[in-house]
Image (cartoon, rainbow, N blue to C red):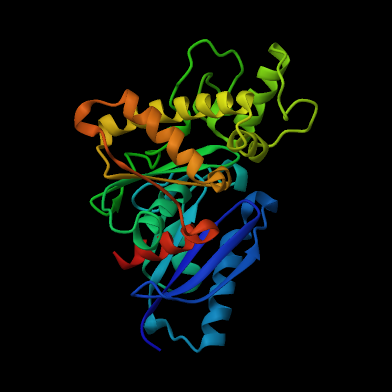
Length: 312
């Protein structure tokens, strides 16, 4: 077998892992449970043991391994130090050093999970062919990753790309999970879309298929596709908030493309249409006509991006 690398995507529920060739071919992929008890003390030992088991199964010797890349849900410094991954129970420590010690593999790279997913999409997904892009993940929250000249933009403490906490409304009183008010995440995430739909239904009487039912973000987009006027307005407001935020991002980053992923992105073309329209209306002339693409790697973006970190 030729030289390989491991890509690891550490999530709050499961750890996704894959073995890759240097050309980006997936040899194998699998998952293990994320054990968060005892402040996440078992997470890295379990990952190391699983990698070693897979190496034995595939008859991969250490000298065949280029390295291990791992994406984690929190800010990460360039040297692999994480800063309090709260949902894992972790404090501040160097993940790269610890995983290297546990596996005996010297080359370990660590990145923020959203940034790593962006790198994966640039390498083998919806952003393939672009070296400068912004990825937006629309799920329970709103995440982001920035790729400049083919490399992750991490910032000084690994917190670059947190576009979900751009302030888009100044009269909001509800508090975001970050402690601020009016964040993009409060309106463009799956939960935010539902919250805005319920808020609008409470404040007005209208004829809509969304009335009197337990609403999901998918319901809102499906209704808008069916030309439900109330849902169309909700989607337009969603597109306005996200489009304006991405226009602000573009005026600092100047990307070639935006890649939109996460569960909400499954709504498809309607999201690209409404977001790009509002982007074009709110960005300066020199930044118009950027590409808007849907992510293609789904839940595998993180393992692809983690592998790519090692190969760069």
